[in-house]
Length: 250
Image (cartoon, rainbow, N blue to C red):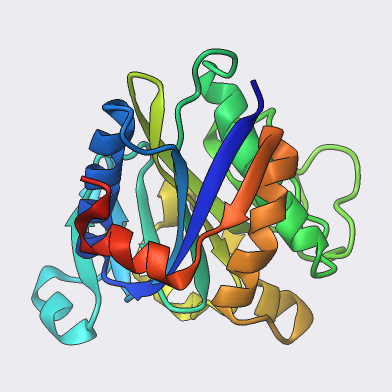
């Protein structure tokens, strides 16, 4: 049976509030009370730590954090330390991978494919580097941003434009990806992004001089979810999204 996703544009949401919403929708999805759902949003500035993250990868001193305007939150997703903030599209799919997509690697690659498609729609040739488990996410060749050249990446200047971190509960997904549109890249200097020191982070704005608003990126991602997941996908009406935020998914 063909899948059906409902996508919700939430605007800017503090991380802790969005996490609580994810937990509530996840519980409802596990109970079969709601269908497959994708939360699309941007966050206030926040540094998050995945399971087993090295806190030493946060370079912002503890005593400076209250004055930096950047929250620090431990979370249950996979991965190390990352940053979310304005100008970055965050997607949290809460979908049941059963019965035919119960493969974590495939799911991670599917999320990457959505971001690759999103980059392509804005003239950037991004790629998922499947051969290196440490380079999960979506990458761009900084010297050839229009098309990622074939061949090994060693010796190239590459930058990450999209990060992935997921968690699964009985094959229902949580967390997701973050795609850099007009993100303030200087905030990544406060961390070692995903524990990777040899390559940096980039964005549509850095590569192309401009980037669409996050809501436009969110809307552009909706048909991509349909293509990648072979699903019928729709963008919820604002009143539906507001009802969900008030607790309609409980």
